[in-house]
Structure formats: C-alpha cells, structure tokens
Length: 401
Image (cartoon, rainbow, N blue to C red; front, side):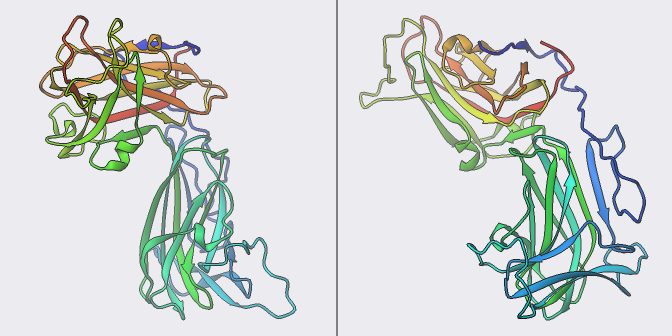
C-alpha cells in the first residue's frame, strides 16, 4: 500500500476527539455574532437587526434595478421582544447610474434579490444550517423565498434554491440545510432573499450554524445511494450491485448508522452469464472478489481516522465467503490492498466494522471498498451478500500512524 495504515477492528471506540477552529469574534449584540464554546464543534452566527445590518449587504442580478438593505423598527420576526428587522428592497436604478457589481450577465434568469454575508467556517467538509424569518413588506405577495450557501459569492439567481414557500404579510420561519464537501477553504457565503424584483420584504432572526461533516450514511432506500458505489473487478471476478426489497439492515435491533427503518437494501452478487454459470474472466487459481467502492472528502488534518460500519448478511451461498474491506487514499487496484474484515456472513443481519488511520495531508479523496471473496476450494455457483445501513465516519485522528 502507498499510504501508511493502521487497522483496528471491533474493539476500537468511535469516540475520538473532533478539533474545530473556533471563531475570533466579540460576543456582543452590536456585532450580532456569537462563537460556539471550545468544546462544541458547531459554529454559530446570529443576526437580529436590532442595532446594525452588518455583515449583510443587498444585491440583485437584475441590471435595471438596485437593491438596498436598511434597518427598520416596529416589528420583529424573532419573537424575542425586539423591535428591529431588516428591510430588503429593490427599485429601478437611476439612468445615469452604473450597473451594480458583481452581476452575472451571462445568466440573467431567474431574477432574484438577496442579502449576502461571508462567514469564517471550519476548514474542510462541513454541514451548514440556515434559519431565518421573512415576510412580504410591499409588492411581494406569493413571492418565493430564495437561499444560497457556497464557497464563493453568489452572482446569479440561478444559484439559489427555493426555500420552500411563498411570502405573505405574516412572519414565516424557514430552514435550509446543505453540505459543502469539497472546496471549502474556511470562508462560507450565505445569501437569502426572494425570486423576483421591484418589491420589498422583511428579514429577521438569521441563524447560520456550521459543523464539521464527519458521517456519510447509506440506507439504500433509493437508486441515488446505490449510484454512489461502483463495482470493482479484481482477480477475474465480476460483480453486480442491485437494490433489493426486503427487511433492511437498518431496522435490525443492533442497528448502526442512520437507524432508518427501511424496506430495501443493496445486494452484491457475482454475474451469471447466458449459460447460467457465474462469469469468470480467468480460472479461479486466486479466488475472485466482488467489491464496491466509493470516494469521500478527507479531513483537513495530517492524519485521519476512517471507520466503516454497517450491516451485512449472507443472501445466497456465501456463508463461507470472506468479508473484505479497503480504506485508502488511492483507488483500489490491487487485491493485496484488501484486508479481511472481522466476522463472517450469516443468514441474519450482522454488524461489520473496521477502522484505519490514514496520512491525509494534501490528499484529495478517501476511498472505501467493501465486498467478499469466494470461498477457497468452493464450487462455482451463484452467490450474493446483502449490505445496508452503511456509515463512513471520517474525522481527525488522535493516533499517529
């Protein structure tokens, strides 16, 4: 292997420390921002517009209009006894005024009006939660609320997502969740507003929270989760990955991962050719393996713990098959990279778990592969193993390889 790896089986605890850079901001109401405590991995910013509109600024991608954000009094969307809110308005530009910048003129539609701010974030993959309250002030009944979160400033309405409903004269609380898995270098841009122009809306009680993303869960209830995994053919073995109906491993009593009571699971089998026999590229001098592989963002630390856990079961003729796992910083290409996973396949769902510590400084991706190897000396026949409730846990390591 070309990375230094330490493997640990069932006895290793997942309770490893998670280090997140905290924000250096003054915890004052004037600043309208608050940092999390050092032992809390969540970073929180809060804006109430009671004393300032900072750090928010107004924008629109309608080059015939301009947008403004002003602090207003007499109403409150936070239900905290305050009297202030932010009034976002767009109106025609004076004919002698220069167009607002930046404006993405190559994609003028859809038109949107928004406020935006940039925040310091934990480096690397993060989960972002945005909560805010909004309502129509003038000329925006049934306008659709819009939201954007990204690692660069927003410039076009097409970058925004519908926040889930139309506006009216009543304050409406909204929530948006997303993950920035690649490209986050420590600055996150958040924008909220509406699709349209030539109106005004009220905004208040904006909460932006960010947390290091450590878990990738696969309950295999839909084809999208299945598509994240690719079949890897090694040692002359072909594999087929299907979505199958039946009691999923996530509903088992000893469940791991997301804990969804599902009705489907993934099934990894060998390939049957037109003669009804398993397809073999070569004679099985070395027993073929059936494997699936996926890639994930690394942590930003020099050393990273990666734990692969989930449920597996023998679906057909695989009680003697060897459970295999690979955790590395390059794609799986050589059978020698695979490791035997503790345990064996049975006709009931069983927990499988393996952890490795990787050197990830400057690494762009982490690769995980799971699967099985035909039993040594066993007859050639159709075999399959079910997988469900997979969890890939990636975080900073306290143990140096």
